[in-house]
Image (tube, rainbow, N blue to C red; front, side):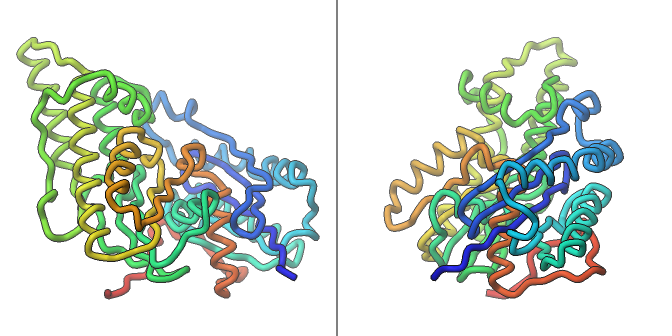
Length: 341
C-alpha cells in the first residue's frame, strides 16, 4: 500500500506569507496566502522591515487556516517544511521560526528547502517531472537554467551575470511610472504595441548559457530620459513591446540551445516571470518543434511565491532524507550546491 504523506510548508522569503498542506508532493490540499503588495507599492519595491512585520502578523493565522481547510490535525502530518533561503533574512526568519516551533511542539520532522527548488517542483502539480529535466527559472531575483539529471539533483548551467529578468521588468516599469510590481502591466502593454525600438540582446549568441539584462534595462531607461530631455514623446506600448521582445528572444534562444545540447525528457518554466504571456507563448512555439520533450509550464496561479510549491519541494527532499535540526537558521544567500558537469 502506498504511503500517504502530508507536508505542511511555510514560505516567507519576500512579500508573501503563505502556508500550504500538500499530499504526496503532487496534490494541494490547502493553500493560504497573504499578499503585501499594497503595503510596498508606495515605496516602489519591498521594504524588508515592513515585510517582516506582516509575516509576524499572518503566519500563525495562516497555519491554522491551512489545517482547517484541509480538515486535518497536526497528528495527520508527515513533516513540516520551510523555505530556508534565499530571500530577505528577516522575512525568512519568521517562516523558519514558525516551522521549527510547530515541528518541535508536535514532534514532527523539519525539512528545509531552497526557494528555487520550490518554484521548479511546482511543475509536479501539472504532471510528474520526468528525468533528466531542464528548468528555466525566471523571477525577480533569479534567471537560471537548471539541469536535473535525476530527482533532487540540481546543476546550474546558466545564470544571470547582473540583473535578473524580473528585476529588469520592475526597474523599467518604475521608469515608466508603473506601479510595483510592473511585470504583468508591461506584459499587457507589450501585446498592444509594435517592436519599433532597436534594443540590445546581450550574450544571445554567446556559447555559454549565462544571461545579462542590465544593459537592456539601461538602454530602455536612457532612451526614455534622452527623449524627455529633448521633449519627445515615447510610445510606452511600443517600448514595452520592444523591451519584452528582447527579453523573450534571449531567454528562448538560450533555452533552445540548452535543450539541443542536453537531451532531456521534461522542460519546466518556473518563477514569477513564468506567468508572462509573451514568454509562455514563445516557449510553447519553440517546444512544438521538439515534441520529444514534455513541456511543463508551472500554472500561472502558482508561478509567484507560494507555500504549495515549497510543499512539493519538501516532499522530494523528505524522501531523499533531508532533515533540519533545532539549530536551523535562515540563509538569505542559499544557492543550489555547485556541481561540475
